[in-house]
Length: 471
Image (cartoon, rainbow, N blue to C red):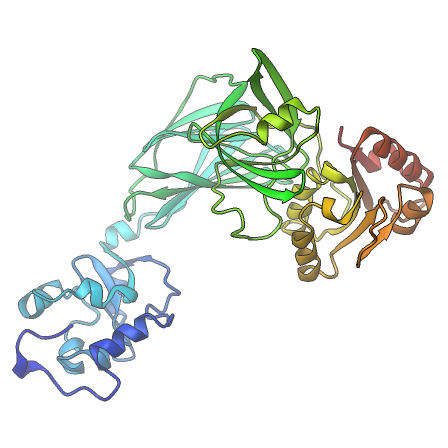
């Protein structure tokens, strides 16, 4: 922040020129002292940062941490100290009106200055909506969150934004309309703790500000929607006959999909509606391989078959083409008392296992141990092998993958074999009536594979309550 006249400048120590300051700002150093997180700052809070070693000041509503800038200030430390701990807008305007301070101090922004009476408004308000649903809300400058508490596990959740300040949510078949205090962006961020029924919906404000209220809620007429329109974005090759397809809801809609649930995909082909179930999946690891996947995207792993009418159609879509997608369906729930999950999958039977694996390893409630036995014909047929291996390396004591090839190209970390009693006994622990049943089994593959797996795990002592077969 240079002074307005040459005679007011002071000699700076070597390494403290404007270019040195710019280099420091681009070095990745945290000049805010807050990790770059924007906060709201009251005048009383600002006044506490009034020391040479802890110096904040406000200019035109924005609060800056100028502690590290002191020795770079052309007007000297003493000149800058005059404004710390205060709203220095008037002082700045008198001396530095022409200076582009926003550019010079852009890496020092702490947040926005707010009046104490606004700052002291309760940021979390509890609102009983109805007997079986309670709501909290809280906010920061850049977002607001609604937190819903249901009395049911695995609640059905759908949210949508009709316009920038018209928000709808549907929880367990009950729809509510929220007229927001101001405008927000889309998409939102939704987190659901399935076991407790807690739902958090995070909406991002178009303008950084604290709101005096989130708005108001009213009951909305429930509109039954059987299928939503989804626009095809892009496809990515996974194996020689499997593609990862990205779709985006045409409307600003988010439907929460639990592990093991599927959707029906529908397209009109040769004048007829053709519909098949598919399991929505997300990559198992953070990756840039598939571009940016937004919260409101629908992702599918699709294998093409010579006689597969719908699969061939999906894998030949062009950007801008559309399909129709049902709401999530399926009765699968993770077992309340089971923490050892054994997954038996063949080929594209991996698709329902992907969200189960991801959610088990990221559960905030329990510590799951997961074993995946994955059958494929050859090495080149294995879907997302690199991602599975990366997860194994990250969760060495909690996630194990055994690749089993039925073809003849045995590779490292794989073994040859079909589904048989020996393999099941090797990897699936036997259960007896006296055991505390801690293991649960999921099975998905072709019909013959499913039937064999079921036969062998029953011989291992598992009852119908201990396993689930995806059809």
